[in-house]
Length: 114
Length: 115
Image (tube, rainbow over all chains, first blue to last red; front, side):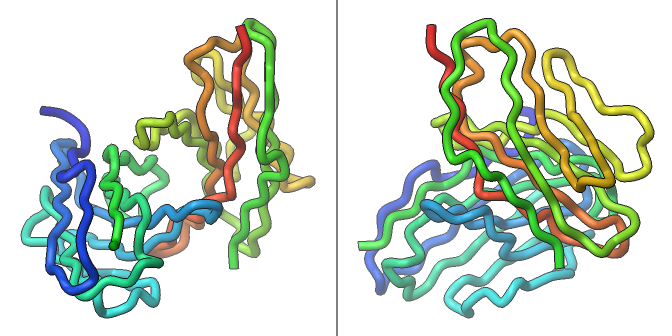
């Protein structure tokens, strides 16, 4: 496997459910990111991890909880979400968070909140 | 604060024609990077091309070139000899190079290539 892999591709959940999004990168990168892409809005950065430490939390509600157990894996734990949280969630990685190297993205998880 | 503006919500181009997608930016950083990404309907974001603020020459990658005009703060993407597979959303993004700066994206332009 190569690149950035996200699972699941699609997720439908109720507001009281708990679920997790998974991201795995096989590029040997040290930085990983979560983005949210809502309809008619620019991509919004949610979290940045560098060498498994969170370096940025972009004012994201606590119902989104990231976890980075190692430099290859990144999770986004979801709990008590709201309908406005329905969006495409994209994971990305880069060589490091200070680099001018491009971020490589996964295919995204399309999340629908009922 | 950094800001990216893409003023073309949608563009329609005939196959094999060249197309220019506009991008202007605003930043107080002296050093920064500019990126273009392509997002097909499947959702993945595909990196196309990068331009550093101190690069003297415009970046090129195959059929993609970046028309970088620093004084005007513009970084337009030029696609030569467009193909049907070029139909997608295109996003311009920028990133400061001081510290762990985030990638800031524009609203995107939806490009449709007509046969």
